[in-house]
Image 1 (cartoon, rainbow, N blue to C red):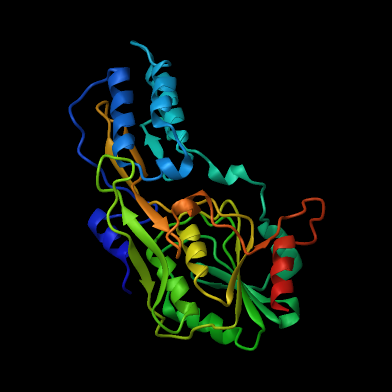
Image 2 (cartoon, one colour; image 1 turned 120 degrees about the vertical axis):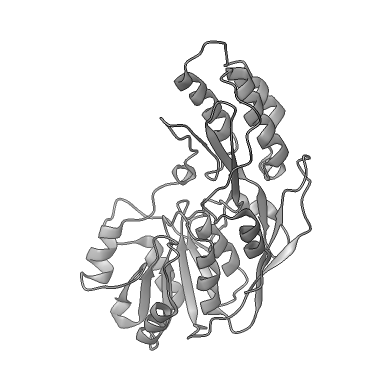
Length: 333
């Protein structure tokens, strides 16, 4: 597996949903000093200001006006947490011993997944559980459905081989990654490697290297090698929504390089910047994205979400049918 992302992960000692810390500079409980410190760290190291059109200087003025001497820790936390949510990035958090700030990108779109509906009307109760995967035949045995809810880092070659053998006589696969919030970034390459037969560049990456908003390393390719076990070259529909985040978005973006794979559903939640973190003078910790992931045409704007090839949303007035699965079945059959 040859890719710059693995190199970045080794250097930083993190996965897509983990963090390390810069060293704090001094100790202080002064509210303004802590806000200024957090603002400056973001200003120098956050990776998506220009992509998101964020005026970070204006943000500082807005939230500095809300800080005053003697304010409670709870009040200060709410101000600084709200400042970080201006980045609209779920890899960005402020962490204290009493609260954690978050943006909540999945709430920017409608809910598009109901596991009970799928159990009742597609899988029945006799589906298989293979590590992180839940799977069975659907559509009268013509399609294999695989539910993949999280990148746990626990998938094995044996699990993939078993599923591919089991569904070898079907017309296609559905890999359901809706509401998959991410996890182990190494799983991204394990998934994509199952759908290729030669080393394939799936996207590009670069890391923040200087204090300017556009100070980055050279753009490097992320290259996935084919798996040593069974690979699948027939139709694959990957189901995604706004809750498909981080490693889920990496997989969705990488799938754009594969002609026989389509994304079905809603735009993903993004999360294509790997996070790094630090400690404030008052002891609270934080993290935010310090890398960019770029598409094959070297565009970083998929941080705003990877769009589907086939758009489909759930109709919550009919709880006997999953419109996203139905759209995927139509593409396969």
